[in-house]
Image (cartoon, rainbow, N blue to C red; front, side, top):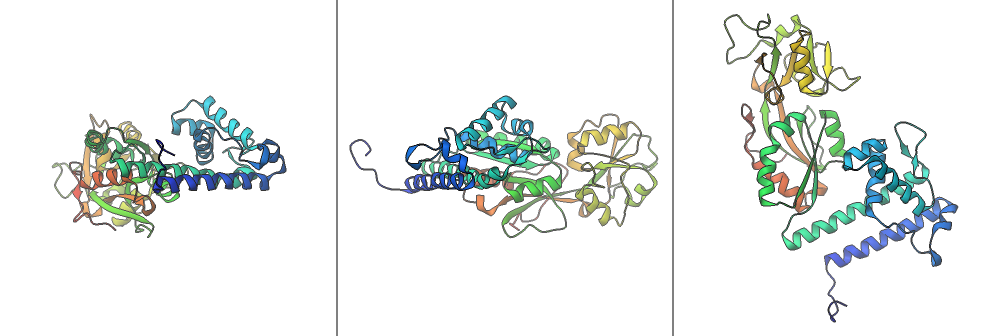
Length: 364
């Protein structure tokens, strides 16, 4: 009853019924998984008392990041609070969810059983919030964007400033990674959106992707470096084959020979050159080149976001041999008003200076 009248059933009522059924799943899962869980259940076989959805969010983050400290950074919470949330959830369910004896941290057998249901409840709550947004027209959701450091520094600030002016309650969180981590993050659902370079493989059918721009690669070297032509740079850029004469410095994850983006550029140039030095951060590539350790190779946008004072930045090859950057999201999030608003803002925004805008910007 609402105000003395019976409320009509609508989308939010069905969402509440969905959450109630999920709670029943919790009860069945926990009782079936371990007998000692039953000792924590309330009389009459009711659901274990999970008092805060934060407990679920924290547990999922600990498993996804493989550590309490990683979850704390991702959630912007103190590590002690993360530990408290997981411990409280374990007490509520009557069993250990996280195996703390190994690194990286992983779920116990009970944790593995419970994890998909925790994710399902969080997803249901998010869908409920999206239903409210659609009903009220006020966006107040949370959107996690995985992207390259160059994109978060050289493109997104302007996009987010305009979006914030229209939707001040919408929260956008940026997380920066190399291409392999971005691709795996969008595929696993850790990110709602990703802005990343498109390697040779087209996006899968369960992803929507719109090309944004193509950008050249550049060489970052001291101004007197022998790689630079004596007569000055031309519009055609450096001959890529001259890179074989010098040690290369590029982006790569630890243990990886080269980042897929740089590997794609080298392949387009018909080259196969191992990196002499590598880092995951563009500014570190510039620093290594400044120290005289070799030729730094970066995408053009990354170079513009770095401190290259006292260094020469020279384009390599043609734009067609550069990297294609796109915005991608799972099709499952296409109905989210918050995600859709940011997706549209990114597609409609003016690309950074010095890049070639993608023709048509059609969905792939």
